[in-house]
Amino acid sequence: MKVLRTIKEDLDNARVHDPAARGDLENAIVYSGLHAIWIHRACHAMWTRGHRAPARILAQFNRFLTGIEIHPGATIGRRFFIDHGMGIVIGETAEIGDNVMLYHGVTLGGQVLTQTKRHPTIEDNVVIGAGAKILGPITIGEGSAIGANAVVTKSVPPHSIATGVPAKHRKRMSDEKRHLVDPDNYIDPGSYVI
Image 1 (cartoon, rainbow, N blue to C red):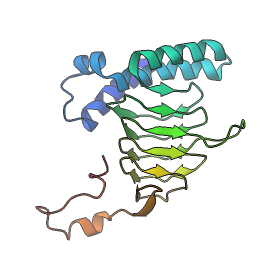
Image 2: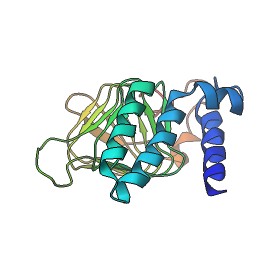
Image 3: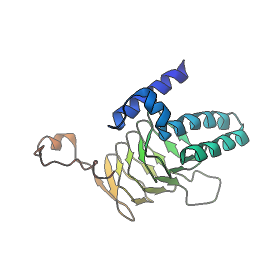
């Protein structure tokens, strides 16, 4: 039953994150991001139980099927959503929290060749824009947004926006300040990063 609850939660999450999501059956059939995370969960279970070769083989099948490469060692939280996932790469020691959303072309990669923690930690409620590269054992703080095509090699504090090459960060506008802005002319600073 836990598997069915998780699938239902993922399908509900797809509708929350994608206005083009029409219905659960269609989404379950056509969303490669959902397929990638479902297969990854099986790979990760095998990996953590010591069945490394079958986990890597299934992960390669996942990559072939979806265009999304997730190492079986990567740890991924609940309600993870991949929109237009082609070209995503998630490394072995990457850790992803709950309610994280990635767009196509995102890399969560390493910078060293040693067997250490070499991939990023993405905390809860983070959005990462298309083509962003987050490299090394850094942390992207809770509630942050990473801009499209940003190259991030230093940790980003919680509730920040990081943009540019190399990425620079600034605080996101607080909810208290948002109500003071004219809603007809307001653009959420997190919305342009996608």
